[in-house]
Image (cartoon, rainbow over all chains, first blue to last red; front, side):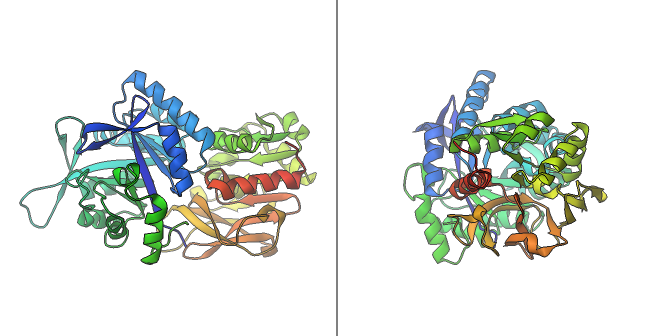
Length: 258
Length: 204
């Protein structure tokens, strides 16, 4: 039986791991390669590095971080943040990443998804999506946002569910769904959003943004119908070690790799 | 010396990293003479089988691979490196493969999500040195939409369930092939590579 995946996400800035609260106030949580090794030992099923600044100098640092990680750690590694071209993707894959995650660049140019999928295979191309609930409408809808760094982001003018379906048609092999409303709040994933996307697309869906307790992960995998859960602060600060979370999920009947 | 065949597969570096980590000497090569000289050969793979066959043909690697397997040299195929060894694949509307192992590569036809992506268990149908120190039902990392079905089902030594049981490890003589990625399967994956080196009698 295919197990549900637990994926720590390491936000990296200038070669160091940070974690934003609502994408702001970055705090330092260590060396990415060491943290990756630590999570691997704890039983992480995959790792995600997200380059949150991605100026060209820092991109070089990121390539080096990816290379040093891939030399030592033998679980899948996804790299995202600021990748705009097929050449950007190739650099990360050649450094040892197994998948690349694109977000804003795909919204601006959806054909980037198909160009990447044709060159590297759909299994390499992850669509990252930042979505926010549209206030005061019924039934509930979510809007896609880009440039979620400084000022809360910009509305992309796309419906989240439609965008997910289009991205899969264009060749995305996996979708990471990040709820801007929930991100960094530690009050749980947006389960309705997850479920709506999981029921729409044929590819794996990864829940992101909002995990505060092991139960939040459980709910994303059951009510949210997600195939994997991605989180940062719940793991980084040792609140809940990955091994403890996996045991908890197993006890609640979820198939996990222990 | 281990030869890892370089035809542009994107998991080449990961496979080389795993072998390096284990402390074996390796050469990443697309030269027929390197393949002929090697003690053991690994064919990595990610992506589409028809593209992989086309790349191998274009680079003149089909005959060296056939000779290598025919000579009984230890050979390990990984993921698409397993699939291309078969007679043909349904992928891309149907395409011939290398026909080293008689059988077909078919699309997974379950109601579950495709690709089959993530960690799943390998049931050991037969005792084989590639499984030495690997626990029964150990988890390995899979990413694929197609699976191989050998005409001779006795070649299947490991099986995995994804809506349907499918061959996840195949062995014939000194040829071994895995549908999963040992280089992405943590410690148990490294044990698979180490076992292959031991089968091949390669020294560190």
